[in-house]
Amino acid sequence: MENAKFIIAVVKGHELGEDVAVVALITAIVEAWLYNYEPAVDADSGGLFQQRPSMGWGTYDEVRHKKLALDAFLGLGEHSSAPGLLQVVPDAASWEPGAAAQAVQASAHPERYAEQVAAARDIWDRFADDVEPYTA
Image (cartoon, rainbow, N blue to C red; front, side):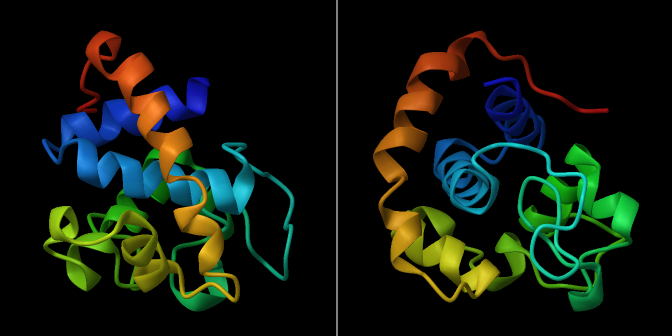
C-alpha cells in the first residue's frame, strides 16, 4: 500500500486529481501489483508501470525510480521520450479509466485495466484524505 499512497501523493502534488490517480493506480496494479520491480520482468521492463527503456521510458534505473516512472507515465518526465497520459489523454476525466490506461500502455491485454477500477477507487477513497501532496 505504500506504493499506492506514493502514487496518490505524487498525483496530488501535480494537482491532477482523482481521475488521473485512478488511471495511474489501475496501471500499476495491472502491470506490477503495485510492486516496484527491480529485475527485468518482461524483456527489459521494470518498475511500477513495467516501463521499458528500449521504448523510450527512460534508463534502466529511471524506470525503477518510483517518482521518475510515475512522472513518465503521467507525461511529466523530462527524461522520457514516450508519450504519457497527459499527452495521449489530456482529458482523462472524460475517459473510462481502463481505456485511458490502455491508450498509454498499449497492452496486449487491455481488458485487465477496467477490471481494477473498483480497487483503485477503493484505494483512493481509503487513503487520499490522509496523504499529503508530494512535490519534491
